[in-house]
Image (tube, rainbow, N blue to C red; front, side):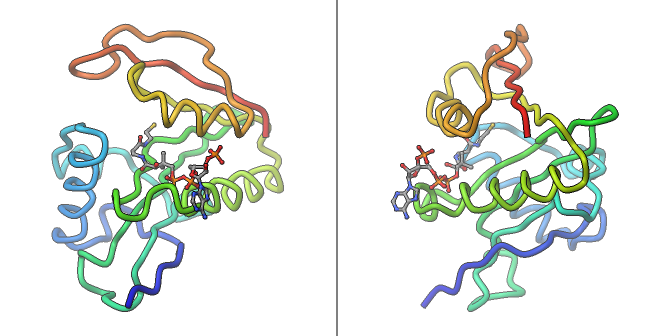
Length: 158
Ligand SMILES: CC(C)(COP(=O)(O)OP(=O)(O)OC[C@H]1O[C@@H](n2cnc3c(N)ncnc32)[C@H](O)[C@@H]1OP(=O)(O)O)[C@@H](O)C(=O)NCCC(=O)NCCS
């Protein structure tokens, strides 16, 4: 039986190699993006309300118990930037992403942040719709932001 819950995440550099590898595998399977261990660490995600991990508590602390992450960083004076948001296929479209988004944006608003910003692949219509429903809009296209395709920058008010 699964026992799925969002919890606060560790800094990538404080995780074991196995946990970082699990995140790299999630990125690859769900977004087709290739990350190296060093690029994960270089993201320098702090431990704060914008670092959440979706965990299956019934198999924790196995690396395979990690089912998703939401990684954000403070950005400019009053904004937050989402650097990674990914959920294991089996657990997508069940409300988990929406719950993490609501929690994170609520906390950021309380901290005085005004805007949220991110990049998404032009072909990733499902994610764009997820963000659009939550008040974000495309503000510009970034040519070849990804290795194989263009990206959109999306921005919204908190
Ligand atoms: C994008 C992503 C993080 C969203 O997380 P998610 O858990 O799938 O999102 P949710 O389930 O909360 O919401 C998606 C839709 O599922 C449906 N949904 C929500 N709760 C549901 C439930 N309990 N049962 C069935 N469907 C539900 C809703 O239709 C929702 O649509 P809405 O956005 O109009 O509210 C996730 O789908 C994912 O990892 N995708 C692949 C990677 C990716 O594209 N990441 C973004 C890169 S920028």
